[in-house]
Amino acid sequence: MRTSAKLQPFGNTIFSEMTRLAQEHQAINLGQGFPDFEGPPSIIEAAVDALRSGHNQYARSAGVSPLVEAIADQRRSLHDLAYDPLTEVGVYTGCTEGLMAAMLGLLDPGDEVVMFEPVYDSYPACVAMAQAHPRYVPLRFPDFEVDFDRLRASITDHTKLILINTPHNPTGKVFTRAELEGIAAVCLEHDLIALTDEVYEHLTYDGRAHVPLAALPGMRTRTLSLSSTGKTYSFTGWKIGWATGPRDLIAAAQAAHQFITFATATPLQHATAFALRELGPAFFESLRAEYTVRRDRLLGSLRAAGLHAPTPQGAYFVLAEFGDRFDGDDVAFARHLTTTVGVAAIPPSFFYPTNPEEGRRLIRFAFCKRLETLDAAIERLAQL
Ligand code: PMP
Ligand code: GLN
Image 1 (tube, rainbow, N blue to C red):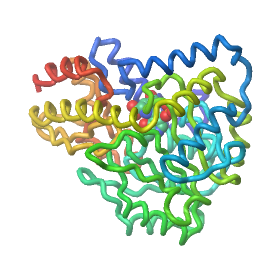
Image 2: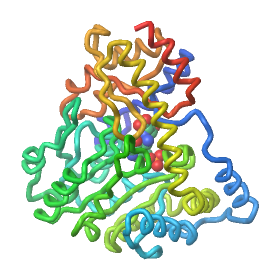
Image 3: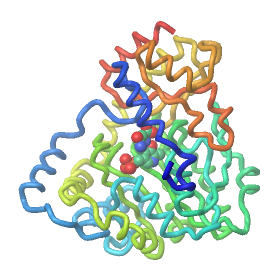
Image 4: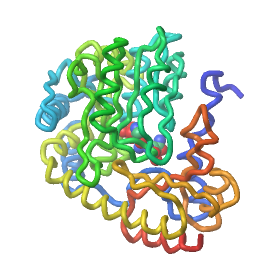
């Protein structure tokens, strides 16, 4: 084994493992979160146009002008947050690289990062690569409410950063304004930087609003907010991500980004600029309506099969408790579902680094699929 000691604990990602297993067994893949449908044709046309009009050399390292301008304009029009496109916006190869660049740029060895558990799998690996230490605050099934006593207890003299993902993968939780205000108060009291992963910002259901932490009083100057094209426009393979934040936080992430990838795919940045300019609130509304139908269709069938599935408030995952429907842990259940039932899902214990037991009775399904795909999966799941 030549992998560094830093990375050895993380192995292969569970998403790659389950997609491989799904392909091997021709299972319907409700595991890894990627749509099985295309994003808007007009955005694809914009990408083709960009390829044909000479946008094929290195981009400006922090992002091409039309894109950073479109990002700043959208933040202003949706949330009344003003950012200077040239110094307060950064573009990365997906939110994944944005997170890595931010952590490498902001953290020194020994710093501590507070995160909520269950946690998206790339965060602990980023913290490890930055030689910092993770601290976890549990969000408990099925309500996933923030425990402020635990949050306060997790802060030490070494805490530099708190990382929040809302809407949240894998729980479907949308942090409430009151919770975000409580988190903001902790950040202000302890002089913490907030890093927010908002890749599901437009996927909130039942009239819930997405509240960016940066929009709360006192938070704009200490929050780096990340998002990307993958979920909103259904192009997970494009890997165009971005951050908005105050100049010093953007500069820190840029210090790392310039040496990780330097710049990201130029034509796709131009197409993303088109998407942000042309497909705004009306598009987000129809996206939410379509996802609500998919969510409810899957939820109904999981409940009919006897699983305890709380209603996701946002994102595109259902995290369900399987109870006595299966005699084994989440990994065995995910394998059984994939190889025998023919529906791949994700075993959530991988999202619980300090308390995997919490995840062993749970299973995560993605509903970013065509209704026909969901119906075919539902037919198979009825065997449960
Ligand atoms: N953050 C979260 C919470 C995610 O679920 C995902 C992927 N689905 C990402 C980040 C990765 O985003 P990107 O594809 O833009 O790198
Ligand atoms: N974010 C996606 C999910 O949660 C997976 C992305 C990946 O495969 N790294 O399913």
